[in-house]
Length: 273
Image (tube, rainbow, N blue to C red; front, side):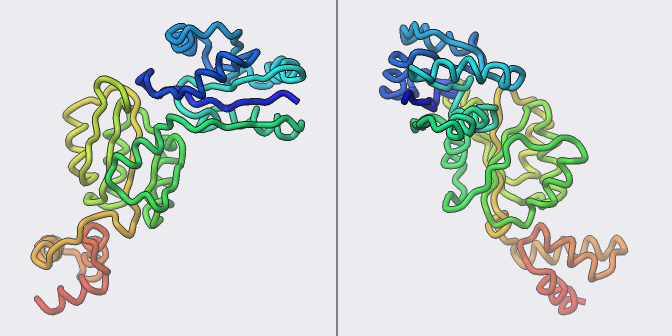
């Protein structure tokens, strides 16, 4: 029985494709590509002349039978525009359909923006949560509320046009000292990692418009921010009390950013009253 190969392609630098991936792409009878125009840049570069057909969000149902008609007698490779197929693209539906019909599915290891950004962020990698592309507008606020107390490092894709707005919401909801990494243009000529507190990065990207593809890494709640010193907590608490807030409310607000428990901040306020 013929095999469906899941073949990762470079996320920027063409040198990041594996020797096995090149061999498979040359040997299969058909390549199912998310965008044939983008993928032909890759195949021409490596002198791959395998026939190609498009398989994307808008034709995924109509193209299934063409792909399976080929699979009846010959191997097929599935690729995306960049990275590993099936991650935030319709590839997973083809994979599921192939498995349901009994075809062998062989995934090849390779490039993926999620893991590249994660290991480059300097944050915990023992457990992480990938959430795909972040939600828009009011749905984003709700999504960040759900994520703020999760202990895992969070990895997400975001548009550069919404980045400063998203960082502002992260600072507001998760605390301005929550650690964030903005990984931009991974593996490409202008690759950059911006690491820092959400508030600091928000200010940076309000002044400088980012370009290119962005992957966001957000520290988990257990390690989201450096713990404030007692003097920093007291200063923030005094400022809120002077503005007329109750000690209880001020303690709750300060604790979210300080890495202290509400009770500890409250007790500090009583001792210095």
